Length: 219
Image 1 (cartoon, rainbow, N blue to C red):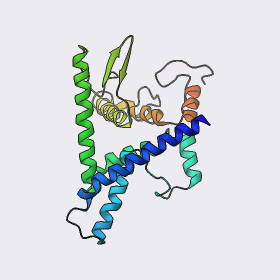
Image 2: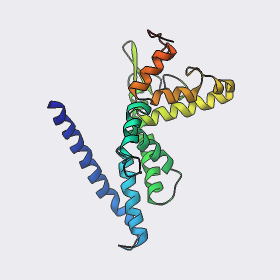
Image 3: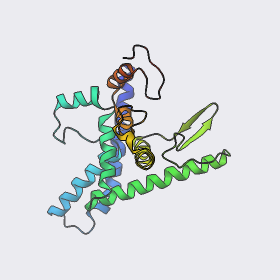
Image 4: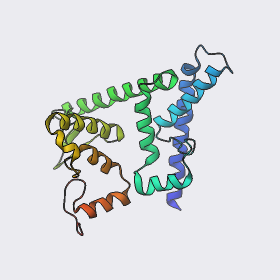
């Protein structure tokens, strides 16, 4: 009962954010286009896609993915599939043209600047040295007590993935054929995207969890 109320509030605020984002971006999307024209309609469709990706609510149903496939994706293949597909779609749109590409570049540029600027300012105020090396496990983190706390999201995980791919290709390219997720950056990234059920299965089968700690019942 109480969880349903929390869910409704979350969905309500999310819907409100999408509506206001649409209203704010619509004038830019339709600027110079004749109302009702093919270009006008296409621009609004691209804007709708962009807003969905910005808010992590990409519609897999509209992509033609069947309910059964969506259930399998969410249960076994990927943790938060709509959010992750929306994030990767937004990053892919950066190299596209039209309204979709233009808005993606604006959004990614703004998020990159705001996120890194905030992190650097906070790190300096705390007397710590900012870590902007995506190949380092301490990337975009701050020391808090005995642990480290940092910026999360699929965007950061993709930056880490790109950094690890570059580092491995330069220093140990043989790791790309390793079956150990601790060595192979591609397997490590894939493992980090798995749903809880599949992730736990991998932990048990390999005998170690994602960060290398031993698990019981390892094969």
